[in-house]
Length: 292
Image 1: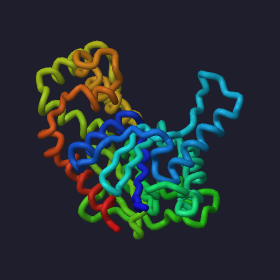
Image 2: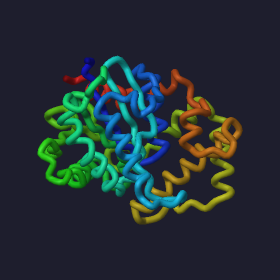
Image 3: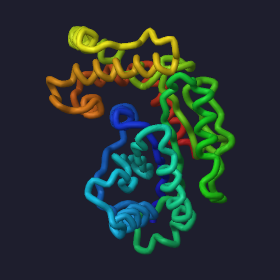
Image 4: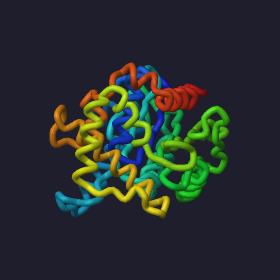
């Protein structure tokens, strides 16, 4: 029996998932896997199978708005397994808490449920990725701690000691190194993931980004001078999303920003790996994943 260390990453949106995938592949050397439920190490095999069965038993329509919560992608490196989830936004805490409510008891008894499994998850870590938006890193860390302070009184869950790192104020890790958070932003006061992505695109596709920016600015009105910081940050992020999506239409016509980030290859591997923000996040991931 091989003991597996797992990491569950909860992202706000699909483009966050695409960015994390690139970091896992290019910076950390993880390989994407596409397994059947039965091929996952215990207790994920039980968790996913039960999730599908429970939802299938309900009287659901094909266009149901609430689908069962499964990872968008899974990566493996030897005894390390990483599952990346798209939560749909920082306000979607209920679906994450429901997943954890189902998962934590199974994890506590993983060796009992293993049966004939050759791989068993004996350790789990959890990482929450949010935009700083207009509230900054400190307030974001506090919000995460508040939102996930308890999981239906599950005794194995404790999320009160999240501490920001001195070497990287965008990241915070719990004392037991089993929970962490990372905040995207232009600085620690505000911003979004787009503040990290667009400069890399400008570095590799300067002419294309300039043309895309000119089109986006000529076709639409952006209220980036809004006096309210919350509205201004959101408007800046939307404009940058529009520019990135527009720039990728030749290679991935009709596709969303997440596909463009993940598949259009507008950012070279060299630029991506050497970007200071990417390197800071990659170093953070290394520190968190491999700490015993």
